[in-house]
Image (cartoon, rainbow, N blue to C red; front, top):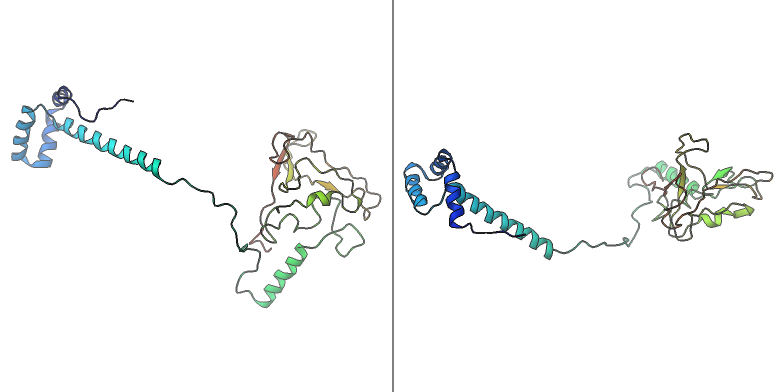
Length: 247
């Protein structure tokens, strides 16, 4: 793109004659006063220069200078750098400071229940079933500490067939991939759905004799790591951290 920093003599003369006299006079008087403006007018007529042309030339130089400065800064400035995963202590998962003894005890009791492994029957924690995503809260909320989000190693692969369960691991659950909850956009009858459809069922488990509930079908499969390209009726959600919600 071509540009000219210094206008030619003919360009300045054209700017002079195209400028309204009253505008020229007003600008010169406001800048220099009445007597000085007469001298400046004579000087500008002799050299074929108008006030508007002078200001336009100056404005153009300033604009080019600013543009050049911004461009130079953009070229020489340091690029942003992703610092990666933060190291050190998690900085979360513990109770707030200043709690009473009763409040701390309440927090610790909830934290212990958060880590309880649930079963269907014949256990100390009979809270599992008939459909579930995992058998404890902590398995989906443990990164960077209890109450967080999906851990680096996905525990749901082992949970799928624990105690004889006959679940098929969904295509979007992988050993090193995130835990995903699945929502169906629409039900089988075409009605709007939007609800979470639990990944697993208790059919086949030794603590659930006689149960024959059917696991949802999440096919067709897509990319197991990205979750893209599979069943278009599914929306995924990774477990959200629960810090500040009492965990």
